[in-house]
Image (cartoon, rainbow, N blue to C red; front, side, top):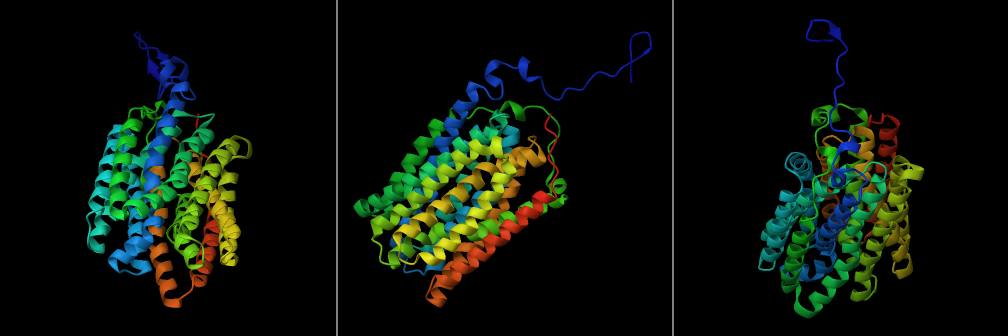
Length: 420
């Protein structure tokens, strides 16, 4: 209760956390044309970053031969990259909530390009853990979560669709990256290929940074939930644990699919196209599932992505040397991964609100990072010890089933956030 100048009681004025959408500058409105330019910039940046990360399988054989290392040791380089990508996203997401995405996008370019350039001169695998695993991972962490959550803040009605289109850049980079890397490695060797990719990433992120304008829905508003508050919710804890299980299973094929195909009699160039197929599935999953989010609901689609991951491993187990079945596996895996990444920010916004979304999504992704740190090296160790891929494949499928069960329990215990 407030008083006027004469001391009489009056109704307390409404507290407005942020200006109504209709009085903002036209360029700052959600679901506006400006937001779609942001989507284009984010898609470009993600294409450059993940085109590098997911081309790692093309370098696997050349690096293993050069360093004389086993499958588990080389896979650990990739695992470090994914670990830092997701775990540091919790911190870069919160930092982006404060300073905006542009400074972090610049840092991403410096770390990724610098790491690739330095890796091209490495003569010991242990040094490669730092130059590639840590530096590239830190760089992608600086770019990924801040840019993806930036898109969420530019949209309300079309959020799932916009996230699908923006994160389709990851799929496009996956489609192009592995075959391009394979051709460059054949022509110039793996070291010069990393130098070429370093230049491509630097230029691409520089162009994308100009479009990364801070989102209107992250200006002002109520307080962001703390990590302690989030982990205090059973739904968040279960959702987080499902991400750990997802990461354990999901990233095994990203490292070993090309090598698996080659060891089953498929030519190197043909085997490399499987990562492109995976990228096509990823891109389709992001765009199609993102567009369907408004009709079927993001929570239902999110569960479909986890279920698709389980089905994909079942196909891989029975694929053997059949290229056709490996294509089916790669498509299913790509759709599940693409939908998972595209819908995760929308799911987080739906369940926990848009304020502090960068920190919330970043924290959720640390679960996948922890899983990725253990999954591929453990699979590589199992393959080296058993002399077959079957044990690693079966274990990955069982873990994928566990991730789906945990997700179902998380959503059963969840209460949607109040958004308006």
